[in-house]
Length: 148
Image 1 (cartoon, rainbow, N blue to C red):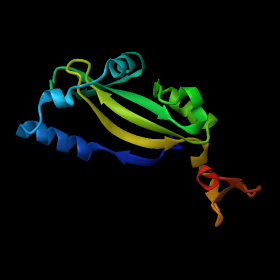
Image 2 (cartoon, rainbow, N blue to C red; image 1 turned 30 degrees about the vertical axis):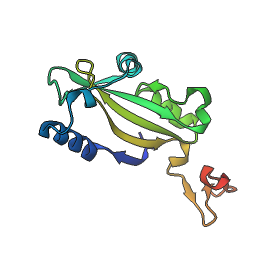
Image 3 (cartoon, rainbow, N blue to C red; image 1 turned 45 degrees about the horizontal axis):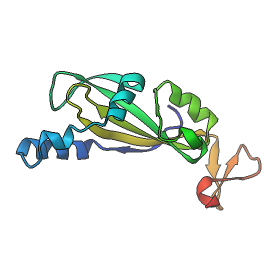
């Protein structure tokens, strides 16, 4: 997605959790605790991956994309398919996406990454010295951070 920015990858945290599990410092009940809402979101809105679950190794993981943002109003916190994200990115100024991996077999779940999407990340916009975004030489448009 061309407006994707501020990506945070949680793979090091995932490796640390798996290392703690293999060392016996935490149990499988501590990491395999997906809620029924997360499992339903994975079933209806998730994207299957080709990677096996690191715990049970019998099922492929499913990625669920949750969206949050001020402009979303009642839609904030909903799971969306990956195909819906570019459409939302072109209609909304900015929103945050959290990607969670879920195993439908053993209920393993972990936050994979988070990133920002939206029109504010288009290449034609460049912030000026006042923190406003100038679009193609027109009048400055205030960024959401500057409005607070």
